[in-house]
Image (tube, rainbow, N blue to C red; front, side, top):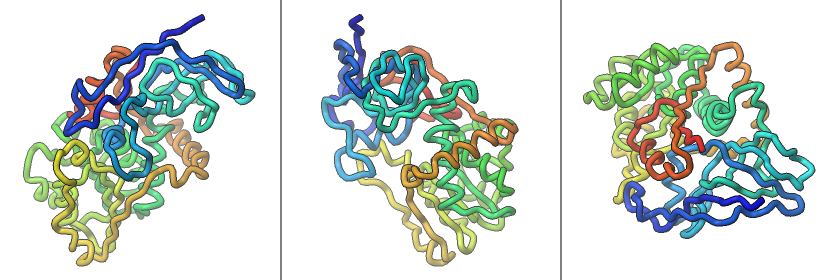
Length: 334
C-alpha cells in the first residue's frame, strides 16, 4: 500500500522567531523499508528549544538543518514495516525521525520503549531527552549536596521541572524561576519546589535575595541573558553553574548577550560549565533505571503538555514553546 508522507522542511534561515515563509509543507509517497531498515508511523513529536538553534548556520554540537531538509525532531513512532532483525512490526520506538508522518531508518539511534512501564509521551520527557539532560546536568556537572540551594531557570519546562525534582530528591532547597503566577504555583504545589520566583513580576534580584538569602550553590540555566546575570549576583562561594540552554537568546537577531557581571565567578570561586547530555550516552541505561524508579515510587512527577492538531499544526505549535505557553514537556500528537 502506498502511503502519503506529510513533511515540514526548512525553507529559509529564520531571523528572530520562525515565520510561515521559513517553512515548506510537502507531501510525497512514503519511502519503503529496504534490507536492514524499518518504516515507522510517527505518533508524537518532541518540541524543544534546541530546535531553534538547529535552524541557524554555523558550528554547534550538531550540524544545522539544511535548507530543503525535513526539520529535525525526536519522536515516538510505531514500527509498521520491518526488514531489520532488531525490530518487529507493532513495536513502539523512539528516534530522531523528523517532522514528518512516516520515516525510514536503519535503526541507528532508535530504541524500543516499554509502554507498559510508562505512557509513550513520557519517553519524550522524563524517560527521554528531558530526563537525561536533567540527570547528568544536575548530578554530574552541578554536583549538588544535601542542604545546598539549587536554582533552576525555565523551571516549568521539561528539563527544568525534572531538574528541580531531582534536586529535591537529593536533599536540596530548590527555587524555580518561571513566568507567571500559575506556573509558579505548579512548581510549589504540584512538583514540590520549596519556592518559585516569577520573573514576569519584576525585581528578579530582590526575589532571589529573598528566596536564597545565603546564596545560590547550584544554578541550572536553561535561559541565559538577564536571568543568568541576576543569578550571578547571588552566587555562594564555590557555586556551580550548569549551562544547559539559553532560550532567551535563540530568537534574537542580534549577537547573543553574555553576562556583563561574569567576574562574579572569580569573586565567588565559582564555575560555569556547558554540557550536552549525549556526552553521557554510555550511561543512559543507568539514568533511565534511576528515573523510572523515582517515577514508580512517586518521588518524581512527569508532566507532559500535549497538543492535538496533527502534523499540520507544527509551525504554530513550535511558537507556543517560545511564548512560554507550556507547563511541562511540549509534545505534538500526530
